[in-house]
Amino acid sequence: MSNGKNNSVNKNQDTRNLSDVFKELQEIRYSGTNQVNTSSKSNIQKQPNMQKQAKPKAKVSFVENTNVSFDNKKGIKLSNLLIVLVVLVLIIIAVFPMNVFSVETGNTSSESEEVVETASIPTDFEINRKALNMQKIISENSSFEKVKEQVSEEREIEYEIQTQQNPSLPRGEQVVLQEGVMGKENVSLVKTYENGEFVEEIILAKETIEEPIPQILDIGTSDFLADLNIHIGDTVYLNKNAALRKEPSENSEEVADIKNYIDVTLLELPNEDWCKVSFDTIEGYLPTNVLTSPTKTPSIIEKNRIQRILINVNIEMELNKSTGLTLKDYQKIFKDLPNDTNGIFEENAEVFYNMDKKYNVNGIFIASIAIHESAWGTSQIAQEKNNLFGYGSYDETPYESSYDFSSYAEGIETVTKSLVKYYLNPAGTKIYDGETASAWYYNGPTVEGVNQRYASDPDWHTKVYSYMEMLYNRLS
Image (cartoon, rainbow, N blue to C red; front, side, top):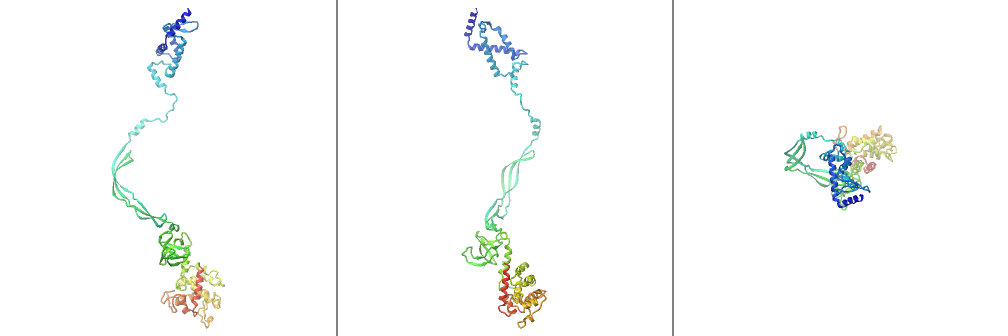
């Protein structure tokens, strides 16, 4: 019996193909699903009940090998069916995750679709703490206003700046040759405003009313002028003796010899090596490397002052003029004179200075006479009568006829006034204390002119001038 049944089951099993098996499985699945959907308390864990409901459709008999078999119509081993069911359940789980189904509520198929849509939303999410306030956005934009207007305006046109190089200016310096003037134009344009605030403009057309006038600038290129911080027309000074030449060349004719520290006026700068200057109305060319300025050589002005005095020292110089020397100059000249053994001239340096200024006379000339006539203050008349000049003396009785003064200063001033009134100035010249020059012995305001009526020695003027020259040279 048992063998016959087994053969019957095996036969039925062999006669079915795999498609029939899946078809049967599909029917079982649908019948089980309908039961789940119609049950108010059904869930996925109650699938064994579905198997129990399907039992009447198959006849199952137990055989010796404990295999479960269906009737001839749907005979299949239970083990095969279970394997297929497991595979099918795994496929369903993969396609439809478990959270799709609502186990507790028993939703219908339409409700299950809604569950599928919502169940896929992740349960872990970040709370949006900056949520949009739609009411506020609508309120703000409801008041937004954008306006465009077409206008015509008169506007200025920027002028152009034109530059040109100028070798007669210090490098980097600018000089305005022509001032720039703005032009004018009519401009048609569209302006855009948002909530009353200007946003942008679009220019449609322009029409020029007045053309702008360009600004013209000279840009300096001279390193020589920049280095000395000077300009054309300024006073510059020599830093060594140099020859003033007719043309800007070392081979050009020499027109004057200019001593160190002397000032000249800068006229032109043909190149960086030569410049045209004016020296006491004489024009010519000097190399630029022999020139300096107060910026370059701060002491040059004082040296120039002394040099200007010294270049005018000559035997033909006019003595009825002040020397232009300062008190410090006089003190420097008479300080520590080697032959002033008694210190008379050093002590009276200020007296000679005062004569210079008070009587408009060359004080160095007055001192030189005193040195010559008193043998540096060592003569008997000088020591006993404070008379450095032998004033009033005659050749026959020099000591007896000479004047006696209470001080050296008194004797110096008496002689100075006599020279100014009778020897140095033409008749009628206003001199001191409202007086005018008598000019009784006037033969010109030079040392030689004074010599003719002041001293019997014809070489007196050369001897006096030698002392003058010596004293002046102590300034340099």
